[in-house]
Image (cartoon, rainbow, N blue to C red):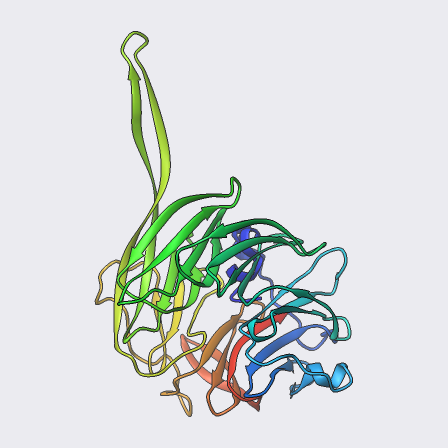
Length: 365
């Protein structure tokens, strides 16, 4: 479950107050945090359990007779449905042209889905997913029977997907210092907006409390772009005999670019958001935070919010466990750093070794 909003898709707008605290002393075996590691010859998953205060590496291999997931996995999302009441994980492995399926009840691998070069996965209901691929498609997919519902052809590779209400946002790779974000109305399966951004290489996306989308661009000059969603109404015709106006309402997304500065590192997933959707967390040489209610380009803080050992850590990935209000920081030195907050200052509560090149954390409770 990527950053609450990503994994739950359209369900995520139901309300932030539903994120009740979790009793971490009474966790079932399928509950906890899962770290996806992009190791050199294979992909591995580490499992962190609050109750046991333990992080188990190579967790997939341990539960599947030593079999491993293919190399180059790009994302892992978690969902629940009638078939998998304790949760199921989908792992995109473009090198293997596959989406691996893991039943979190026992963490057993099941028959995967043949899918050409999947890049990112967004689950928007019990069995519906949107999948981007390296061939410039976004596919609406029925996970229950592995069928394509509809395919959307883009003019560039969509690297990241997120949903805001009924709208799907697909941020594309771009070139020559510019790129596009395509917006699709999932209720009508129609393109409704194309946003041009003067940046390229989007690596992460989140949605705030006002349903506005934030995109982290890992460009030569790193930046975060806020897409200011609005609805416009234009008159398309007028009948003078009846004095009737015919109007059309459409969505717009005006980008505001918040420059961070010259690239300091290549981050895998450097963006997440608070459980009330009002605070943005991001990495720029260190872990920073800012209110989402900003509109001036110089309003983005570059000060560390961490105290202690990891004050100046350039985390490769960050994710917020909204059930426990813990930030998960993943380091390039193969560590999971569990951060807790007191008076808006974050300190390390626990540190565990994980696999090589950890890129993201997903959660299941």
